[in-house]
Length: 338
Image (cartoon, rainbow, N blue to C red):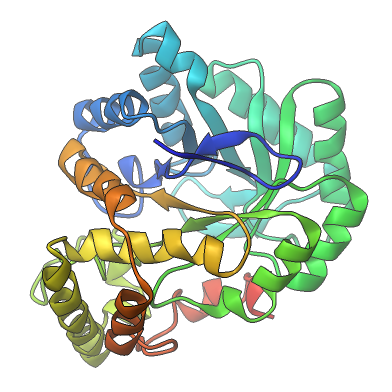
């Protein structure tokens, strides 16, 4: 597994990271045993970056990741780097209730995460969405205090726009910005990629398969549980879904021409964007099974020449996707879209 540095101040991580959210929440039921086996397989393959959040199933995902690490061989456990998001507020019914970036809340969230994960420090810590009532300087400043005390190693950001990135970076060193980036979500390219390149900050890209939409495995007639995010996502609804799956079929033709899968092509495209934009881009793979993990890891062996990239972008042009990437209420929380 190749490695990358998360910016000029961040840690060295694997070229692909493992996003663990789906093992606990938002995509229907997951198999706990298979989830832990998938974490172990990822570590065995050289994946070092594990991404989670304290609000994924109200702490369940952190406990799952902690359990997986405790059961892993010592050498693999020690290579794992934990990226943790905080700040999202939930109620007992699982409803969303905003974001809290107050310094006291930041430290409180961190204390609980350390306990659930069973570790003495978090490698990269970030608020999931900007709290509109708290200046980003105060939130980042609180994480910086946790860094000084050894509870956190590096500071990250999530779904923030260029102006917020600059303000945060003027407060403390920032390792990376976590943001959705895929063939069908390319808003990051306009202002955010140039800003992080200038400031020496990396991108950790989630949603690289658009929640399975462009994986090549999503069927038009698939039935989704009510607790599956995709049941409410604009891109998975009605005519939007059919339009987007037509894009996938166009991408499939390119993938078959190279002898690889649709998912591998889409992931390889994101991997290629780092060099193209002269910055570090680390895709986070949301695999919930060893089978899907193995497929995703195969993307690291895919070389995309300029002709391949041109064919991919002809199949899936920028802004070709139908539907917003989140429902309207959630889009309002994205500083990156402002």
